[in-house]
Length: 497
Length: 93
Image (cartoon, rainbow over all chains, first blue to last red; front, side, top):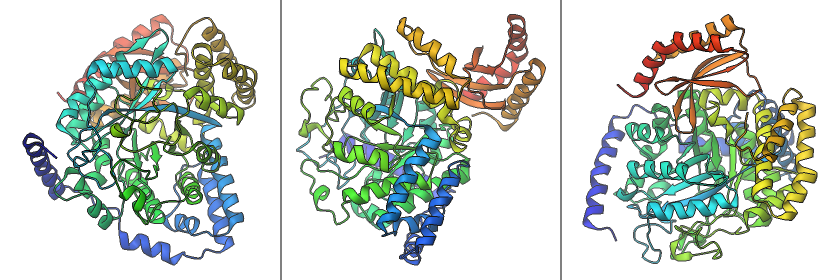
């Protein structure tokens, strides 16, 4: 239960949030009735209609256009298995067309679990006394980061509860500490954040720490469900405040923003349209769409019955459909698949869904990396993950399946952010950078961290395969990449385009 | 926050630098730790690695093409006032 200090902090912040909601000029872009109407109007799409949407999605991948709500409803309501095969094939095609056949790898790092909210589905809700609430000290944080960088990770998503101990100053110090932690070749080169919605001036403070992407998941776009799951006297209970979190981030000139839904809270078809409308609103207001879209599925959490009892739990088959539709509807976005999912599901959905980013070697307990051998620490976790394989095992599988594992962080360090990134992604030319930088960062991994079997497959198959791709597709870059590979072998690091 | 006037000034300067020195692309970014936060630019996408120099006031210039030492100095001198203006605006002062 919350202390008096926590309650006071929450009440004061809630008052500020309510004032923002009263005076905000933003118009709600989610109309529940309209979303259900478009789904109802397209309940039984014809084969021709579905094929037309698939073709439109392919064309859109070279212009960056989003599908329309009607298009997404058609895809979501398709019940023809052959057409689903075509949709999955198109998702994979689009992802390769935009980003190349590379998979960017990152790790989640849970920094702080105390939270003043009481979300019905979350193991960290303040009323759940079966999960220990913990905030890493700077020393503990450094220890966690050292484990991660000594595995070979270069990219993190850091996660915080909404609480006075994890305010903007703490988040900023955390980012600075992470960037300052080095160990021989090991370092974190991009820190993305998953945290609570902020005010514009708070985003401005966070931005100065040099973040990558700021993620806020709406969880569910369905208003009544949102209100049912998030008590009204909590900060997270404020629907509009959360809905426009990334609009405020963009006002603060944080131009890499990320959205997501927790699938399993409400009807998945509705949520897909919610994500689409969110992307449309960001584009309309700021000319910048979501840098990434995430689609975590609700998984069991300690002492959290909803996570197994919801009537909207998503099946494995429907999950693949969700991910594929996201790729078709928003061709340029990064698509993030997490270690919540089982290895067999991940392997299937990476391909069928056109996934572009994935975590591996993950531990989601606060302080979980220093206890790496323990796959689960239930009383410190928000939920449980299903893929606890090591980073190296996962990378080996990626290589066997023909992907290029990538730890690239070049974009935001070469000024390819926001309005300078979107055209590259929307016109499907960003892959030229992605493959080149993927090769170089994977080479670093092979040199510094890989097991003998991963090093063997990476050097013998993966790198030559993708150098050939460069020779064919970006011949002006191939010689420079080859030269840089030799420099990596001579112990130079962090070479990028 | 960067004003529209300053953003336009940066865009125009990127264009004039490209034309004067026959660069393929030039753009400005705010230096924020590791992040180079794009501000404004001119030119076509180029897949080579850009050169960069920090102009001061946490503003960096990136370019694709050749700038010899003399040209770099001239460019830096010519941009110092604009970099100061942009840097000051971005600090919210």
